[in-house]
Image (tube, rainbow, N blue to C red):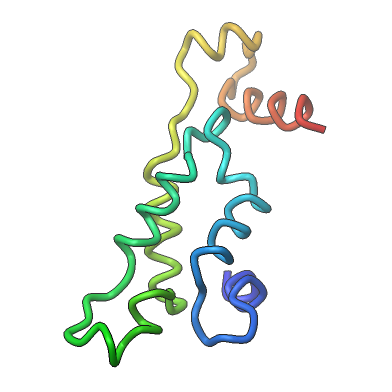
Length: 113
């Protein structure tokens, strides 16, 4: 995760919102149809993971960007919002193996490529 954070943050020491969206898009987490995570959800997770600051003008970088620890918190928040498929969705995709959830995501991934 540290390598991903360093890659998407670019030159600054902290990760901005655009880098956050790019990370989620590239990892497949930002997909409202598959994971249930919308761009709005991702933005809220980013905003809720920022630290509180006493002086917004002096701490503008902390206010607008995430540290690595903040990034981990935001990622945990995103994973908490992921909507697993319902039994009806599993039946619709024909998932009948011992692990229908894994089969579902495997089928979704194959249909995307």
